[in-house]
Image (cartoon, rainbow, N blue to C red; front, side, top):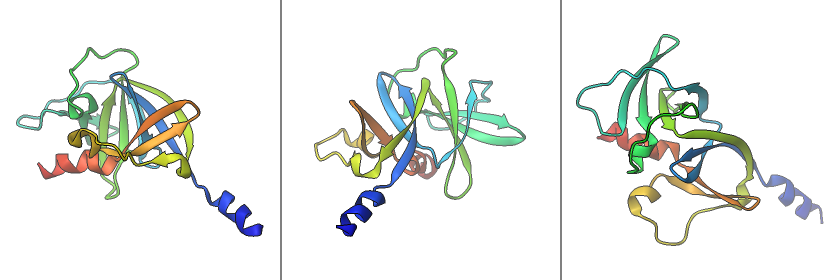
Length: 155
């Protein structure tokens, strides 16, 4: 009986920032999130990948900025007052910014309710997903931040 209680308590809760990109909701593990800033002037960098938009100066630090729309092969749209840059801190302590259409909310998702898709996905997009999180009636595609950034660094 006590064993069941321990198992129930072990279900880890992970917080995600839910962002909107196109018509889809994506979750970014809050452990990676360093800052969320409004759109600002981005300095373009010549001869970079299409999804690498440029750099910003964030309190004296130059931070590279990626467009997640471009990363996911979605068309560019005009920035709105809802557009944000999510600054994430990677495991090596470097920072990268992601432009998203909108920041929705912070949600708690139990680790037990995260599933790795067992159906065939577009391989290019599937490589960026850590899983699908279930929150009440919603499904949220959870981003694998390392995978999103690493390819950029390899190219």
